[in-house]
Image (tube, rainbow, N blue to C red; front, side):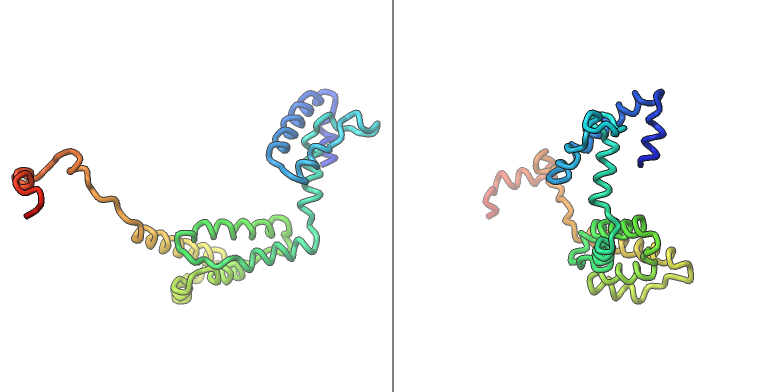
Length: 203
């Protein structure tokens, strides 16, 4: 981060740096709340320290401080990330399956991005994915033929098949709207309107 700021802080880039640093500062103030907002708003301006090389309202410095505080790659954070990724909530309703997959995959991506040496293998991801599912979909996975491809391709194939089945079930359970336009438009069958006028009570 410091190297990056040194590179763009040359005299001919000073104006651009101040412009984008100020815009980033405003965005961070808008997106943060609580302690994080206090941290952002507490970023020193250029007049706070004689040794400061940052401009007033420096969004780059604020982003660096946020990353340092909240994206700490400590052992405790690693354990928490693994716990969230390998023990996701059970899916009880297939209508929530796609969203549950996306939420879980984002947690896996956090590990793979921040802790590349501790990546979750596709075999582990497959086991966790199956464990999330309702009993009937788990039984289907155990009988699924995934071929002899790579672990990644088999994982993606299983996920796609599960999503396809869940989507079909949701569509089957979704009630279809009835066509009541004929009654509103007066499109009666021949003779039916006269019969109704003669016998409105259905006697």
